[in-house]
View: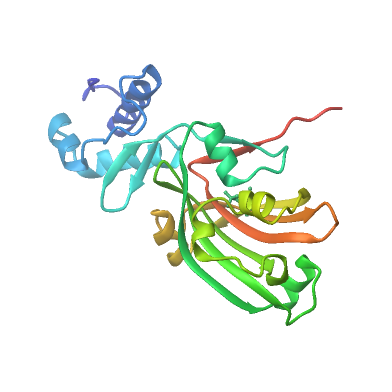
Length: 242
Ligand code: 16G
């Protein structure tokens, strides 16, 4: 571990912050590494916990460290860079990265479409839709929380177990539906208490909200989905031409 100079004009919290940052950049502190507690740091450097806390908080805010409630503070993994080109599913994205996708089903219900859902799915208000709430995980780590709606008439026999794996695979392979195009809108938002609990983050943490309307080759909307991605784990990129 690095050393600090108490007689230096450089504030101690800043020396600690820079020391940790350098260790991460040089690779001696690796992604996923559990950081010593504030108490351990303060004993090791003989400084106050307040000073340590300031350094750690700055590193968390800068995306170098992540706090996990009840578990401690860890070196952040580099963010997933998700392309905005291509209408891929969560499962495809994770498999392409060599990770194992899985889902935790929060709820699965049938209801009458609200005005907003009916508009997005181009169906009549009151037509039956599925509401599917899932936490999406990669190698067991929560990445996103998704709430999606689809017309029940598209998949009258949809059952719970199908939702634990890929819905797109089910649509394409079992129902022979061809998901052809879509529209996405991205917004910034902050986690509510419920979302934070499901994603194992703190209430108020930053999230990226993506609303997707996926459309079948016969121009019928397939789904209207709201995906909340952890902003500490994701960034989105797109190639552009002039
Ligand atoms: C992605 C889609 C979501 C779709 C899901 C299907 C975004 C922003 N959203 O998460 O709309 O329902 O994939 O995934 O990409 P699955 O086939 O693995 O169930």
